[in-house]
Structures are given as C-alpha cells and as structure tokens.
Amino acid sequence: MSLTPDQLARIALDAGALIMEIYSTDFDVDRKDDASPVTEADQKAEDLILAALAEADPDLDVIAEESVAAGRIPDHDVRFALVDPLDGTKEFINKNGQFTVNIAIIEHGKPVMGVVYAPALNRLFLAESPDRAWQAEARPGEAVPGSDARLPLHIRKAPEDGLTAIASKSHRSVETDEFLARFDVNEIISAGSSLKFCLVGAGEADIYPRMGRTMDWDTAAGQAVAEAAGARVMTADGVPLRYGKKERGYDNPNFIVYGDVTVP
Image (cartoon, rainbow, N blue to C red; front, side):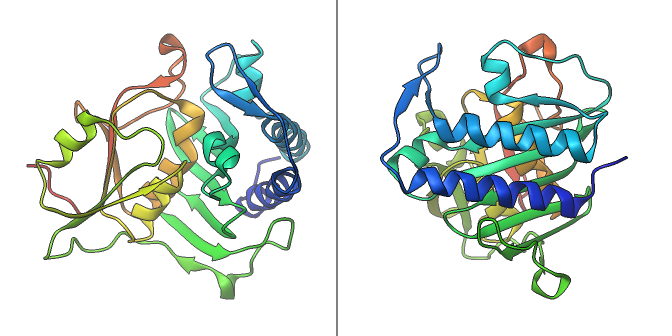
C-alpha cells in the first residue's frame, strides 16, 4: 500500500487544523536540548502525522523532528519519509503566520513527493511527483482542493530588471548577503519556514540561499515542491542536495535554491 499525493495533502490539512487550534490559545514554549523552541503544537501535530502515515502506508519508515529529538531514529531503506510537523516554530511563537507543515517522501536520497502547508495563510503546496506540482487555497481541516482549484506551479523567467531574492526571516546572515552580491538582485524579501522554497517554485522569487544549519526534515518537502516546479536545489559546492545523511546526523550543508538563474 503506497501513499498517494491526495493522502499526503489530507494529512497536512488535518495537522494544520490541530496546529491552528493551539495557535489561538496562550500556549507554553519549552526549550529542547539544543535550546531551540518547541510547543505542544510541534508534538501533537507530529503524533497526528505519524499515526496517519502509519495507517496509509504501514511499511513506510519515517524520520520526524520531535522523534529524533527524543532519540528515536529508525533505520530506513531507500524509500522513507521526512516530517517536520511545525517548521518555523519561531514564526508560530511570534504569531506572524509564516510556519508550515512539511512531509516529504524520499527515494534514493531524492525528494519525489512532498507537501508544504501554511495553515495560517491557507496556502497548500503539493509536489505530486518529481516534475509536477501545484498550489491551492485550503483552509485547515477542510477538503483537499479539487482539480479545478489547483494552480500548476512553475518557476518564472528571470526578470530583466533584476532578481527577487528570498531570505530567512529568522536566520539572515552576512554570508547570505555576500552571496547575493554576486547576482543582479533588485529586491530581497523575507519569509519563514519552507515557504521560501515554495515562493521560488510559485514564481514569486528567483533565488533563495541558505547559509546556516538546517536539517533534512526542514527542507525535503520544500525541495520537492521547488524542484517539481522547475527549480534547482544545489549545495554551495554545486551538487544536488540529497537526503538520508545519517553520517552527518541528518543536517544539511549550505545550499541555494535557483529559479531561472544563471550562476556567475
């Protein structure tokens, strides 16, 4: 039994509904061992996602952020899932809406299907396959949008008057600015979580460099969406970003998401 794209969307919408219930309350904020923030929404959303994935695809191994933080890292084959139940916890705590539910399916290190859902923004992004992605407006917990509501995702042609770069809302660095200085950048916008990948895929930005530590589950779903829309996700060394990096502790090297951008 294999997971379908619509099942993936359904799980993300349900997790989004749970997250938004907590978002509307005066929730507590705790700290993990690495001092990063965590809320009850992170854990409850992960529990929901793990249960739903186990029901839909019982043989699927899942590496999920909160489980890893608790020391539960399953062995996995060439096909497995990566889950970040609440990407952008800082954005969630700051109540700016720019947080997402991320679920990706990995095969041989490459993200082949993924969902990114921003429940506070009602924006759903889904990569059905490595070369087909769409976005739709979707409210938390409601029905998966039908085909007539799905807008195909494609990167845009690089604007003649300069690129729009996108940078992290919480992790902007001098190294990022130095990298972007190599390009003809007309505008720099900021966003939280894996929305940055999706905005390149949606043609709302052209380049997104990430110079700083991220983990496999932070980026896999966003990469699935961006690449299915025609983007390239490369490490700073110029090779495709891949997943299942157990030898690195599942952390990512620096990487860049390129839309229709020529590397100088």
